[in-house]
Amino acid sequence: MKPVETPAALSQETVDHIKDLVRINNDSSKGFADAADVVEDPELKKLFSDMSEQRKRFAGELGHYVAVNDNDESMLSIDNLSGTWKGTLHRWWQDLRGKLSGGDAYAVLAEAERCEDRIKACYEQTIKETAGSPLSDVLHKQYAEIKKGHDGIRDLRDAAKACN
Image 1 (tube, rainbow, N blue to C red):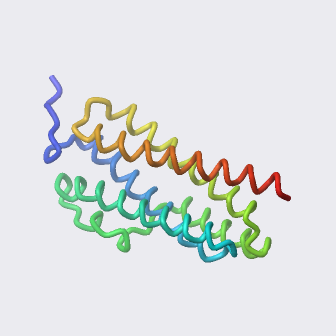
Image 2 (cartoon, one colour):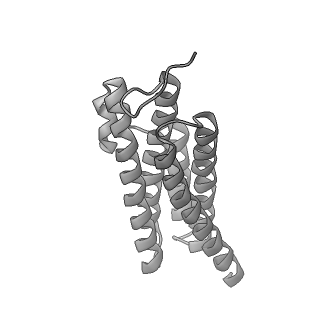
Image 3 (cartoon, rainbow, N blue to C red):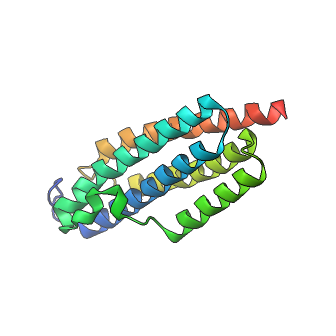
């Protein structure tokens, strides 16, 4: 029989999934901060900055559970995490594309939406694979915000494309 999980006694599988979410939120936070640096539109700068802060907060919230369960204090600080190599590559591509396009809103939004697809899929997989976990409420709450952000970025991307 599988032991009952509590927030302070998660299975290693759940902890590993949560670590992935911490890393992808870190990637997303850095990606949005980078996007805020390349766009000219002040409203997009604010949106991207706000989303960067939200993802940093999500990483910190999830990092707390990893630290408690895995004695891994590095997960508490987003600055100590390098993210994933795919995230680093994505941020490099986003920065390059933003510079090449002169900070064109559509180009930056298209890249941001691709990143949002990735984080949304990671949350969906984690929610499915950790069903019944004591973190389900936290994951579902964060996922709702992730989905809202994704849909907003998608809508802005589509509007920017229509204007081009």
